[in-house]
Length: 479
Ligand code: ADP
Image (tube, rainbow, N blue to C red; front, side):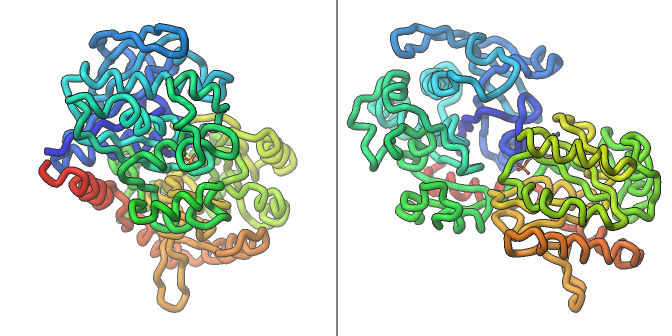
């Protein structure tokens, strides 16, 4: 049985800011069902909900050297969905109000990477593969080679690094990284960690891990081009034989219209009446005009440029000149928070802007909306469109990354499709596609057919988990 230790900075339901957490909350248990022994290691944040925090038990503690300091590192554990989650505990670094965004993030995640490597002998579990996710864990493969490979316990370990979003790389000063990681100048050349005169956590993973993956096949191709490559396209081309695209799934238990306790009323593809009840209840809760005949477009997202919000800003009034309601849930750049708040003031009963992170409301919006808008500039995989399909809510997306791989634009002639899409990053192309989607809303038979088609798609983890397992087995054929 292959043994995998996944290192991550977030995992649902313990800590979440985005899709990475969803993946680490559901892929491990899917792999477990396929017979792999998968465990996860992550920081013990102060924001972990109390009920889950109570389930975490203390294992032991060690000390980690960081620069001139000698720091406490608790090793704790909990079970979730049958999977063991280990936690790295250091109150100074992780007992804070947010996960990221602090001046000492370089130091905090250097501590995390070092702690993961040092904790392995204390986990009663020796992994065959350390699977690192995103920049916060990117330096683990470097540490394995620089400081651990010669030790018996670590001698045969392999590493996989997964890019969930190439835009966030963890770029810091070379001197700072040298100090926290005890690495000399030979590691900071342009074929290793040096990146445009700085150091780069993610580059550590991209150079040193045995195998690289990213979260959709299209994104795996796109990032080899300068437009999507975030200045890593050269390196990714050089490693293209080791780079695999495996699309994310979603947790079919958590997102299940028939059982979801967070939505107003359960429904299924053979009984869609409950979807209308969700819509009426959401309209009431959010002070929108209660009217089944007016389609709702949902948007649940980090409010950042990546998500194509400048396209929406460009044609928002034109969108709202139609018979439509817009429900937004998200936090992020102030300009976008203001855009949607102002729209809510200008279009009472028609726009609802909810500028916060709210998992319960997210489920309600997925269930109640008719369409889900995701016009991303780039999208490694995207989960919003997969979740909305599961609730019979038709995605309207730009054809990029995972959106291109999972949404098939409705074809009038063949009758095939599960949503609507456009190619160019252009506001009026998006507007035309929204209008095309809205034009089908009053055709009730077609509407029902499309909803059923959406709900019949299978984006559960099973087939993607099998692909990960195959990959691990190429690294450890005997396991
Ligand atoms: P990204 O990882 O780039 O943020 P994804 O589409 O991969 O985008 O994943 C986003 C996840 O976070 C989805 O599960 C989405 O529903 C959730 N999400 C985003 N913003 C919010 C919010 N404000 N409240 C609740 N859930 C949110």
